Length: 300
Image (tube, rainbow, N blue to C red; front, side, top):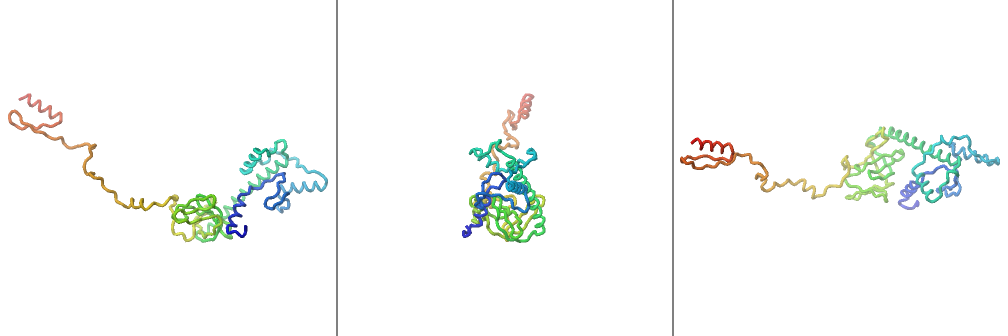
């Protein structure tokens, strides 16, 4: 694998595909070390699982069997991760899951220690993220080299060399192109330019924004002259669409003529006729005028 050009990519994806380890009394070996039997109990930080293992080994050396006692099971942390929950469902479907009557104090302590370890890791990551933001906030505008540590639909994550600080280059900062996310290749590819941003690629970035409250660091590609709209990324307009926008609109033929649906507010036409006396009498279409003319004729 080391001789392959994509060795770094393969190693990264292999590590991420592995399920997080959990504490359990069942011996399943160690995949990475290719050991059929494995138990870590030489850690200098003396984790509780290590102490339990030490006590069990000491009891075996004395010809005894160690069983934890005096522990309130109701007070133990029984929270499991999503990956563990999926594995339990898979084992249950295959008939490999233990029955509740077969569960021992060791199983309960394994779940408790695994849950507390994840909780401690989350707390540590949150504090470290804040400290990294606090450290980098005075370096706005500075350039750093780094490696693409993650590719998503909304951008790429870059881990800066030597600092172990990770930030996001949003997809709107990748240039004036429409980028498609390829999950299988772990890359963003521009439709027009063909530019690729792939996992483990080396890039030079510039710190653009730091948010301490959200624990986020925003980066931009160094030397990028084309800035995409901040509202989002869309496909570039075609030349035909641009031509239509630049072309003045044509006036509709006969637009200056009144529509047949418009109301004519002008005065009604006036018709003239000869009276019996030879005088010209004006006749309009309005009803008051007709009534007045009839009254006039009656008086005569």
